Image (cartoon, rainbow, N blue to C red; front, top):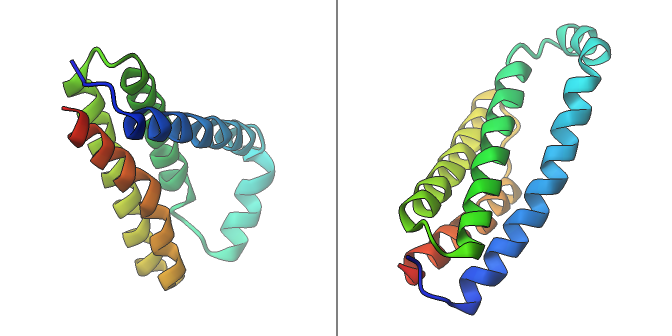
Length: 124
């Protein structure tokens, strides 16, 4: 069981809101698959489906982690979800680096997942 901390509560709410927006984006991306696929193939992007799959896993892990962080019952599940969330963000940054589109500003993507993982660690 997680201890009640304001930091965990605030980070869980932030992660839940961001994940809801991400879920909406993923649903739109999947719905527009037929229009996007030819454009991506012309642009030479061949790993966009991997990015969509990672986004789906990331959204699920973030939502489950945020909800379990808010109810504070399943500490191990919350920590595992936070770890998956951070790992997928790191994988995303590696994919950006391989594609040649990485910039130092891309590191901002790690802030919320790392703060969420830190809040879970402190509440354990």
